[in-house]
Length: 379
Ligand SMILES: [Zn+2]
Image 1: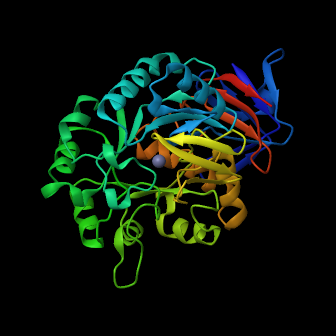
Image 2: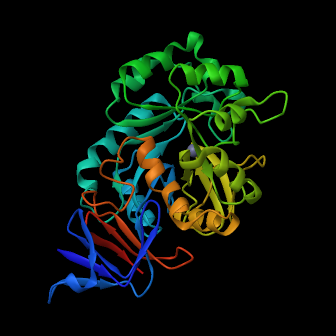
C-alpha cells in the first residue's frame, strides 16, 4: 500500500483535507494520516491538490505526432507527452482521412491498448473517430475529398475499439446509419461537423445521438428563431464537448454552457500535432496548419483544432467561472468517463477505482501524474 498525505483531495462533490489517500493500483481508502504505517511509501503533497487523472476523449495529436498517422511510435510519444498535462487516459482521435489510412490507424491503436495499461504514459481507452461521415459544408479543417456518406458497416467492424463516432445526421438518409449503430454497438454517437437544423438534430437525438462534438464549432449556431445544433445540444440531456482554450469559445460562455449542461459538460482539448511544440507550420489531416500562441489555423484562416493542454483547460474554466474545483475537475474526468462508459473504474477518487491520480498546484500546474498506482511523470 502507498499513501499520499498532506493533500487537498478532490472528490466528486467536495475537497477533503487532513486525510491520507491510500492506494495500490486501485484507490484503497481515504484514511487518517495517523494510519500510515512506519516505513510505508508516502508522497507528501505539501498542500497541493490530489485530483482524479484527466480523461481526454478528443485529441488528435501532440508533440508533432498525429493519431491518424498510423504510427505506433507517434502514439507512444503522445501518450507520454499528455501525461505531463495530467491526462491519465485518452482516446486517440482520427480525422477524415482515407479509409485505408483510418484502417491502419485503427489497427495500430488497437495493437497498443494492452501495452498502454503499463507504459510510461496515458492509457488508451479506444478510438474517437471524427469523420469521415460529416457534412462538407461544415468540414472545418477536415479534408473534403475523404468525406463519405454514412455507412454503419465500416464502424461496426471496429465496434469494440471505437468509443465515439462523430457524424452529421442530415447526411444520414433516414438516419439509418445512426439507428443501426445505436442498436448494434456501444459507440457513443456524436453530432459534429454538421449543418443539421434544430429539428434534424432533435430527431437524431431521438434516434441514438447522445453527444455533441466540440459544441459551437463546425455546427449550426444558436439563433433565437433557428436554434440549430447548439440549441438542441443545450436544451436536451446529451453530453457536450467544449474546447476551453478561450480562443475556440469565448470565455464569457463557459458559465452559460456549464449552467445548461451541468455534469454533462465534457472538457476536451481537440489538440493537434502542433500541441506542445513551438509556433510554426504543421499539418492536420494532410492540410497545412499554422500555430501561433493558443491559435491554430489553416492557410485561409479556418480554425483547425487546438494546441490546448487539458490542465490549462481546467485552469481556464476555473479562472473564468464561479464553478467549484470539484465541478471543473469532474468535467475533465468523471464526465468524459461516464460519456464513454468507463466510470466504474475511472473518472473520480473513489475506493475501488483505478489509482489514476494527479498532484497539482492551485493553478493546475502538474507536479505528479500517477497511472495505475505508478508515478509516470514528476515535474
Ligand atoms: Zn477534432
